[in-house]
Length: 121
Image (cartoon, rainbow, N blue to C red; front, side, top):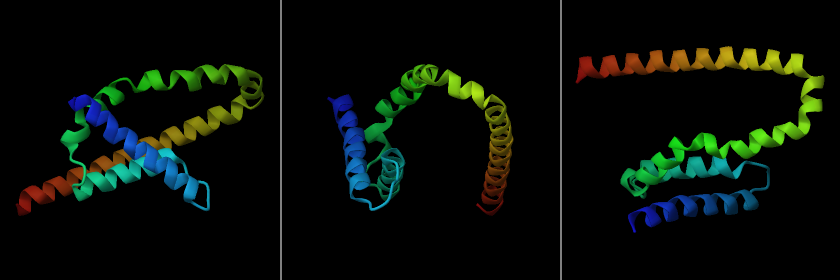
């Protein structure tokens, strides 16, 4: 029963995000709306982590499975990808370096904040 409730909470957030996407006068992905909505619900305490923990852990552990359809559908566009392969490789390298840099800076900032908290607390 607990898992069914957890699935219900997650699906309810997804459903509400789909409704919000349809109402918005501009294009904005429902998945992003859902993540923001879930974050707000968790921060406000309306939804507690215990309400979704097991099902969220399951979904995160099996995330690669959910990317299979997108990966397979790329095979339909191999000719398009081959025509701009050099540009794609350059873009991937640049964004990889930027992502690594942003991650390193975020970790460094988090460690500094944790050290300050230990010193003051």
